[in-house]
Length: 395
Image 1 (cartoon, rainbow, N blue to C red):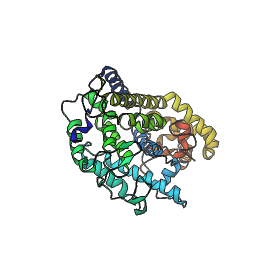
Image 2: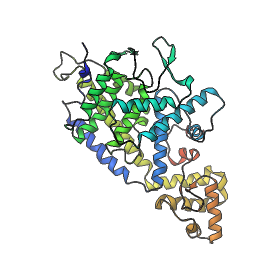
Image 3: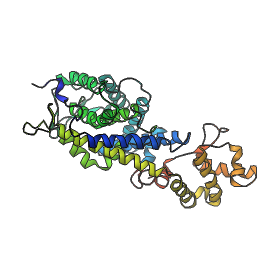
Image 4: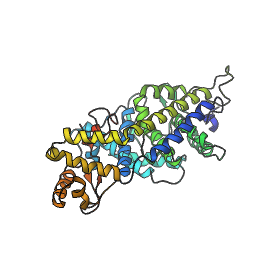
């Protein structure tokens, strides 16, 4: 009979050296990335990374929401087309839950945290979108934040009995918050806990999104999110087939004929493979953002954008670029500095600054406050190529 310990092993304990080496690389590269940018540009990038989490988590579910549609949803500007409007609502719900999760200081491994993620996500959706789909394809009402009250079968995975879910989640929290786990083990356990929570399948629907939101929260609490500058979901989405394959492989029960498959209910070898895949994905995504934020390359892409892709500033592209470069390098600058930066009078500097602000390329918290580099959806493909699939950020 299955028990609350059915998620064992919770971390690989054999063949761990390659995993530890990868975990060290994650820790080192995440620390390096965190020093790449200054405030308030960092705050703009953190918000952009939330867009990435949202976009790619939805993409894993087979749902694609363009950057400009996410931007419109943030301003409560929803499309008339029902399908597009529903995607905007999903994106907005996801972003709101991320913002809530980012300021939580309590346990992110608890059933209460998972239920609150689920409750907030579905409570933000209209009633007609709060549904669970049965194995036969029928839609039934879904109660936000409620653990499942029936058994489930998703593809080849048969979830544990619903009566056992609360005990499994309690064991999950106790094991993953154990003081016996080192920092390296906790980093390796990002992949392990991602799979084990998906395996428990605590809710009738929405489990994939909740598990990815949970992993984002774990990465943040471990201090390896580089201050919010990279996205694990992007890596999973770009390797969607392998992500699902390795998740499914880790559902396997322990092999009774293999000495290196651990001693728990589930396969330790398959869990180790998923942990390795997750760590490699993390290394790849941190390195990707490091490359994008290299100053020289980013300057060149901004220069190209203002000269080629932004007609609103075409006549003053050279001087507008000087302002954008100043904001990039310094983080922000006083409005009164604009004339000096562009090598012109104070009045001309104000006019050039006005062009950049009106075009959405510079922003500020108030009309008289210092200005910083802005990141509207229209610039993303140029400033940050491959951040989103081509033409998905701006249209």
